[in-house]
Image (cartoon, rainbow, N blue to C red):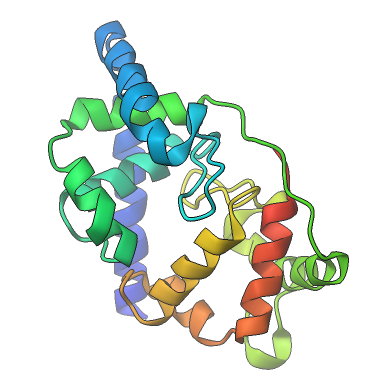
Length: 208
């Protein structure tokens, strides 16, 4: 429990610090971040962060504090999922703190894309797990952290409209602790593969 509380506290502190710095972004930094987003980041994350490639996450509408914290983790090489090692460690390495904050602000201001249709039964099952959890297995409702409609909060990421394939990869990374987030490791460990797929289908169906 102490490890979990410490991890959450550190994350919250990073988010608050990032949000505070966002108020001080210069016009030049905002313009430079937009240029980087359009010319470099868009090749994977899509125009304005509305990714069409299921391997790469959508960034549009994500909370600025969360995005800044993840970019800092990539830069510090402390986030260890496969795509972090393969792509983002190198991409984040040259970014200054100001650029990270400006990129986070840019993407958080973009309008999220629409949700994607899918198997109605799977989406319904996923919605039930997301909103209610699975009491028999000790799985809490996802709304407790990610909010109704999966829009996220200042501390926890927006999941609405995220690609199911990307979500599945991240849950696997939480399960094996490649992404060392104690809260999510505990939740992910209790979920069956089909349950994860259903929740991912539900989240992918949610639009902006």
